[in-house]
Length: 94
Image (cartoon, rainbow, N blue to C red; front, side, top):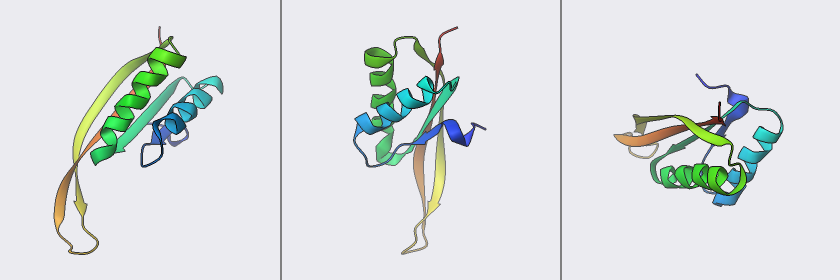
């Protein structure tokens, strides 16, 4: 289980906000940063990882990617629906 202090939950903010959060954690000495996203935010998580790696921190690599399906209960109808999720682990190259 990733440390919550190095986990970034991807949501509705612009991609560059998450890139800045990644870079800040890395500058503050985090060995690993975890990007977590569900549903439509998955593409934003991938964009965040790629922009961070290729444009700003070229010594950062993707260590691991976990994909999963979570069951979410609708607050309005009470129905269960499947939502895809991803965790992207970024860390310094060995």
